[in-house]
Amino acid sequence: MSRDLSDFRTVLSEDEISRALSRMAHEVVERNKGAADLVILGIPSRGVPLAQRLATRIASVENVPIPVGALDVTMYRDDLRLRPARALERTDIPAGGVDGRTVVLVDDVLYSGRTIRAALTALDDIGRPHAVRLAVLVDRGHRELPIRADHVGKNLPTSMRENVKVLLEEVDGRDSVLLGDVSATRAEGTP
Image (cartoon, rainbow, N blue to C red; front, side, top):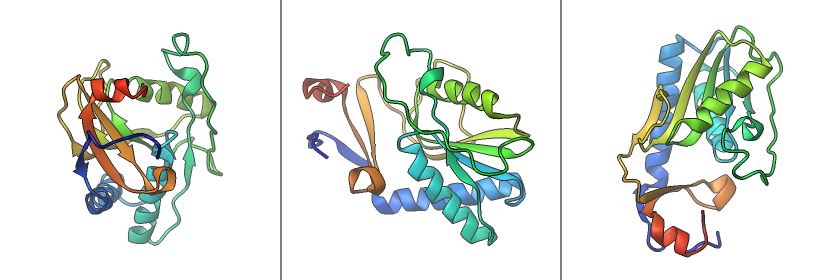
């Protein structure tokens, strides 16, 4: 990772992320009363590896494979006109689709709720699930829409001046959740 993150402090270590995902997997199974008709969709970019990890943990508890995929929300975002130059990610819906199934959307950080609103709209174009649930590694508050997570790894009260960075082995070469000052991040040229 090329960014200097020295001004950030660790709020979740690799072990804490692992424990949070294990707890969330058990919560999903309990709430769903098993793994029947469960589909897990990660929101790119870091929601996808988190979804894969969550599905692996659920599969080990329930001894059944869990369909896992990715849901690109880029074209459904309400801020697309403000930042139109965005790379499209890949939407990958598992075989069997989502109709009549319980879909667990997975993202790394829940903030304003706008990404999840976009995900719900994108999901409408794919099919009609029986239920949709939300699992996030970090809920940092500051909602602008009436959206809440069903499964949360860590509630992390933050100020508007703070920035949450989720680092994952699959993307960044290590696992941790960091918290830092927005002004320090912007000074480095990071949005």
